[in-house]
Image (cartoon, rainbow, N blue to C red; front, top):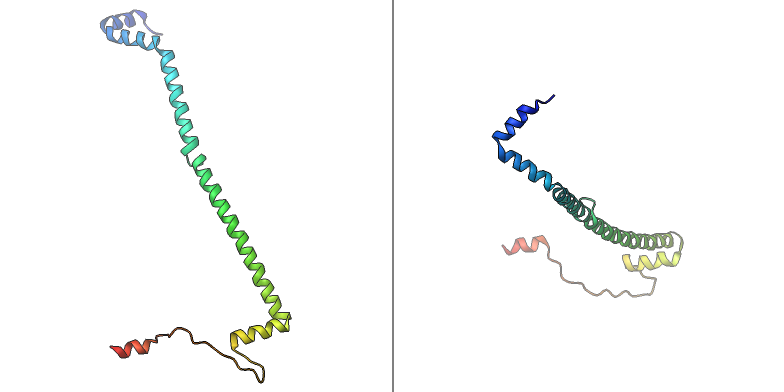
Length: 130
């Protein structure tokens, strides 16, 4: 139990403490309102800029759209390559076309013209210049 007489004597010796207590009691509503406002501001900042906030959500949504486009493009390319492989396994015309283009094959009596490409430098040519 508190000794009320000792408390009254202590407050009489320290009038500024009593005044501060009265001021604090009188402004408690304003302080509570300011604390709640600060809490709301901090919460709003966290919602917008936090680790899982709106800005992070926007970045992740943009990345998801980009990845979905990449997946679609790669699936289309995969389908194209699969069709090409299937053609080369089963279609004799596709096999012949590929052999003519890649291996420069020709039927008897045909002449294949090859245009020269850009000159290639070999490592021995640069070594001879030294």
